[in-house]
Image (cartoon, rainbow, N blue to C red; front, side, top):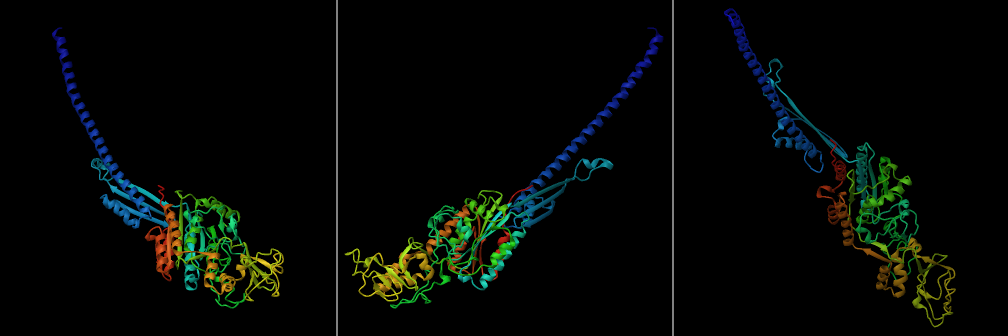
Length: 564
């Protein structure tokens, strides 16, 4: 290469170096810029992670607080409970609002929370800087029961007369209105079981039980003498053999005299109020319904009469909500006594979408129940009635067995109004003193009475005294033996045990039992308190306090169900 060529090449090499030197600066600048972008992105990631951490804490706290406060099983104020959850999490200042909506069978709790996360990096970007990112949380929990079955078991015994019954009616009607009006979906049913010495089911319901024993067929007298065995369960099978309560006055006393007392005498005729199942179209079971007018009318028509058998009332109350009683409800729907949308009830005890509630109320205590013994219901007696209304009784122990055709030494018929033994039944005229007992004709002109026919006309004590004590020398032992032969008493201790057995099984089945002792004596109040689900489900009321008790019960009927 000549000098001229070498001289020409030198400027080009210098330019290339200058170029390289200039490119190094550009790369460095580019690298710095990329690093800044990466730092910014990392910073944004940190800010977003901080935002998510705060948001998750808010949401989780809101969820827990909403769920807990929506539960009516706890007694704290829902607002206070939500606040307490946020305070314990150290974020009480982030709670923005709590909204609680409560109805009869539901409670909804809506919790909102907000928190500013104060970003570290996003607020560095000049005019587009983000000074705050707000984290928000929303949680809603609702407790609601789709199906509610309520049975009101109400004492209508004689001691409830006057002001007490009036206060009960007012309170029960308000309860019905509160419960039904709060049910926008028509899912709440209410049945009413009035009770005194027995429970009168009404003819339609009693007819469903196909194995009735000793049915006297007296209109509007539809009670059963419940066997002790039925108290071992909650249901009531339609095929169980159940003795019909006799239309009989077993309680009223008589005149214990050596003389005859006419059947028209007040000491002989039955006292309607002392029959264990008084005639009534009012004090009868009302099957489940949600018709307010029907419920109010039934409550208005209740009347006070009779003794007190809380055990029987509670048993029938539980029978109406036992799943085994679906055939009863189906029949009531078919008869138009229960709305068709309640077909398929009672629901299973374990059904999460249903709740069963008993409201058990009394103003008294158990009174020993009296019931007819087998053989003295509708069977034939040995007592005969003449057309003039006078009676005589055959006693085969008085028959002289030496002659089977004509027994002139036999005087087997006791005639109370004559105070003497005769050879034949009274038929309107007295036989001669020489007349003989002839088996084939001895009752001519007199009609043999069934026991239910006799009980419809005279009280039990009159029969025991006039036919058993007087012919035996006015024997008190003969009288009491006859009474024991006719009827059996269920002692108070047994009735208490039967009641508590049903209550215990109801609680085990998660039936909610509210108990109201309304001016009740100590023993009665103790039985009701022991029956209630907890002491907080028991009310001891006096006067108008019964209204407050029913109001409290209405406001507490609910069950938790999470909806969001």
